[in-house]
Amino acid sequence: MQYLSKILILTLVYLGLSQITIQAAEMKEPLHPEWSFQGPLGKFERASLQRGYQVYTEVCSGCHSMELLSYRNLMEDGGPEFSEAQVKAMAAAFEVKGAPDEYGDVVMRPAILSDKFVSPYENEQQGRAANGGAYPPDLSVMVKARHGGADYVYSLLLGYEDAPEGMVLDDGVYYNIYAKGQKIAMPQLLSADAVEYSDGTEATPEQMARDVTMFLTWTAEPKLEARKRIGFKVITYLLILSFLLYFTNKQIWNCLLYTSPSPRDRG
Image (cartoon, rainbow, N blue to C red; front, side):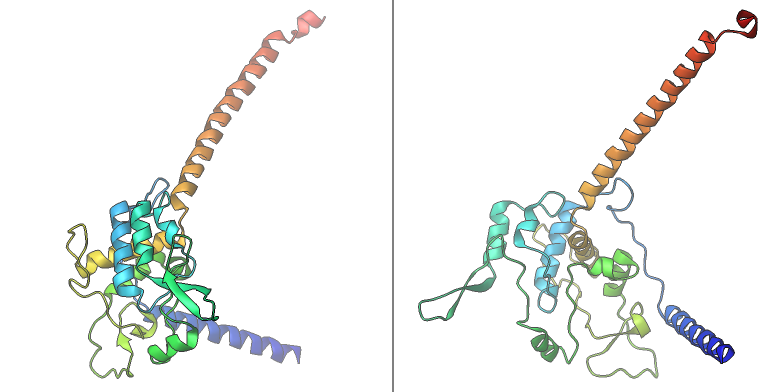
């Protein structure tokens, strides 16, 4: 009986690994652009973060929420670093539920700095109904939640192609060479001039994909620059301490060797 159980377990493990291998083979290796935030001293590009917020607001926010982000985060160090006046104006462009009036009816008010980003849907059911049953995921930590991180998100946004001959796609499903199984429920959104950048940068699909990916990387890790600065200081401190300990230890042993009596002196 134990022998049969072992065979069954090994078979299940083999089938599971085979399935993982097949799925991995189906997914194309993502693009690997250079990112300014890579490396031990990497930083976000402020202009790119600001453009990325514009792409998110004008293109992505119609379907995707950003539940972990407040408007005031947009002016914090290490992020887009908009001015307070700019962020107040951005927040005021959205409405949120305020306190009820004297009759108990909820009154809508302009969003303020402390408010979370406004969600496009009241609830998940509404979101599914508006997207053919598929619920658009929250983008707050999307870059960290997907294998491949920023490279995968960037590639996915640019991976739309015509389906190969013979492939049949259901309604609301699109062909994307970087998606799992090459099928995705999100339509292609980054067409040429989908947005008009306020800084005059040409809004090509590649530029928009890069900027919004930069922005989503920041939302997933808003303290990245601070973490790297602290890490650099800690490593510098440890190196200096190591040198001091080495030379101190060397000096102590030299003193001991010179002050220790020789065997003749002991006699």
